[in-house]
Length: 150
Image (cartoon, rainbow, N blue to C red):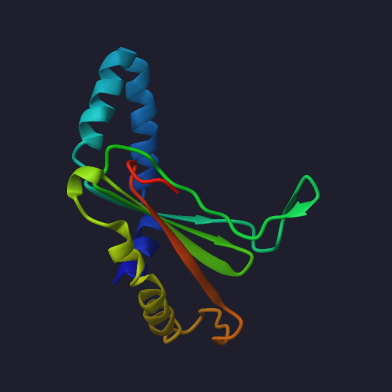
């Protein structure tokens, strides 16, 4: 169902219309009003999942190989899940609002099992690139809350 919805969005005029409408509106109204609207809309979001494709081969920085990539979004959201793929691995970062009084590690402990189930289900559909279980690697999860030390 999700794949069908995403495929429909890819050919739908909805996203370009939203993008260009927002740019057009930004030129028409004062910036402070636009920012106020964005902040107000952002407060209605309680959870966000982001999926960022990273380099699929190992990269180097200052001559040293980078083993893993991770990113976080610090914003006024209840929970943020950030997925990134890098060098044949998928990692997830979790950030939760401390007012939720929940431990992000409680979500993180289900990451690998859930990822494996998702992978197995995805591979049932034709056209997907399959790798055997030994070739893929679901890496660990870094779970944080703004009030915890890492």
